[in-house]
Length: 308
Image 1 (tube, helix red, strand yellow):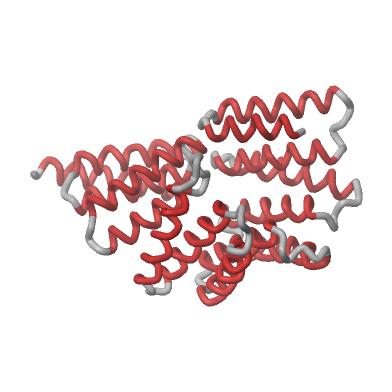
Image 2 (cartoon, rainbow, N blue to C red; image 1 turned 90 degrees about the vertical axis):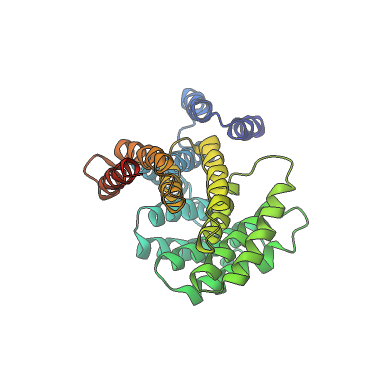
């Protein structure tokens, strides 16, 4: 399987989303042909498939893949393994993205408990659970809990000499929490540290887009709209490179539209609001609130553009 994962990483780095999906499905087909659709390797591939679908905002297909993966591991008696905890964590992350926060916390806590029982509090996946719990607590407005979980995760990942990616991710997580707590100086310092870490990496990182968006948000708040737009554009490019035009891509376009509105560049505002609307309509439907909100934004910007 090592050759499979090496090629998978290369496809992600190249931004070849079609290639990623084909590669995973080809390996699943190969294992089925060998009568291995109920073994741990097949479960691992379903986890990769679920993670891919989650990244490109195909949430129903993601949920199905994670469910099937966990079913296989339960049938194999592997509920108390790091592998099972990792898939639980990935499924919990999907629940968070779809607004099912209570269920998400329960599942993250289940994954955390498994790791504690196995004595793996010093393992990377444990820090990942903590970072993800911090994200859910942000969503529910429990900022002190979010900060506590994020700080614990950061304390751990700093000890890993090969953990530059995890350190950068934790720093961005902390920066967002500080921002939402009104600790703007702390947020600025922390996100700059994260971006410096990403800039030093030899390859593009899948989480770089989030950090760029955090920096852009801080710049926007400070009234530095031109710099904010530049960082949102970089975030947009990084998101598309790894995931294509997903929900995060749409959200970044909305932020760009609002930034260009602040710059009184209504032509650019229309372009980005329209790009967001197209993605929302494709992924969520024409009657979804987000789609309708973007359509209303476009109308307002066109009126303002005409009045210039």
